[in-house]
Length: 82
Image (cartoon, rainbow, N blue to C red):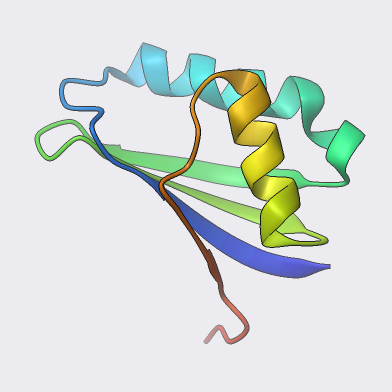
């Protein structure tokens, strides 16, 4: 498993409830793609949402988000942490 940070743009005004709902939608289907979403963050002012996950591939992360109804604009591998 590898770690990924994905980014969603265009979500200006997102609320805490909307972020939680989107995260729950991911969690409901993540196992089908072998993904585990750990956490999500949002900046309502800029409309940017970030999600951290462990997954077999960036494509698996993309598939979960697409199926959950909020496709990721970017998916980045995060091979190093401190």
